[in-house]
Length: 249
Image 1 (cartoon, rainbow, N blue to C red):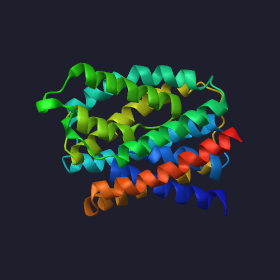
Image 2 (cartoon, rainbow, N blue to C red):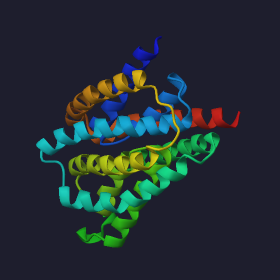
Image 3 (cartoon, helix red, strand yellow):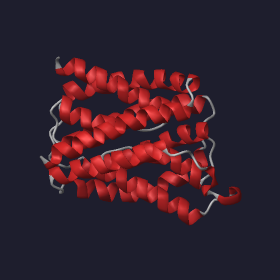
Image 4 (tube, one colour):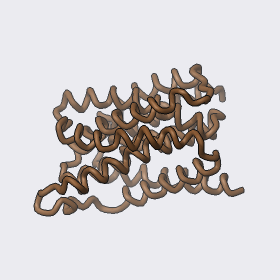
């Protein structure tokens, strides 16, 4: 199968995940770029940030139109992660390729476990949000975005539900704002890195992901959130296991 067709298929899947779940697209984009399209881990994480930024902006518009974005809280949450994302993005360029792959596999497995666990809105006791906890969570998501090239939405959604007591629809929409801000901050520090990117692959990937995000938003409105999360979690576990096995053999 040609790289163009593979890029279109992978992009559509990434877009569906982002549109339906408000995250998770990047944890599929990175392994797809590495194992299907031949990118190095460093190039894949940078390309993933570009793809996720473009797709998240598109999905954010749709969720904003539906009134599912809490701009003030989301901006504050994202602001805490901008500096960590920028610093981690600079560090990522100096890490060994194997270390990036193993770290990514571990994070994908962690995300799958979180998605399989029932959502617990009791994290913000009595509806009171602890600013220190919210800032710490936002900073952690930013660092993750910068280091591994993931938007962090697969962790941002449960964090917004448990830390800020958002309902699921608002968490999904607001997470896209957080993803976009963190991804842009990380890309700013990676722009000077000597990483070769194949735009003939990235361009179609982005186009398919953007179209998929619109379909994902409609899918998310029809299929229950917990069911979508369980399906996605199983896929993530399989991806994590494959990447970990590949990195140690």
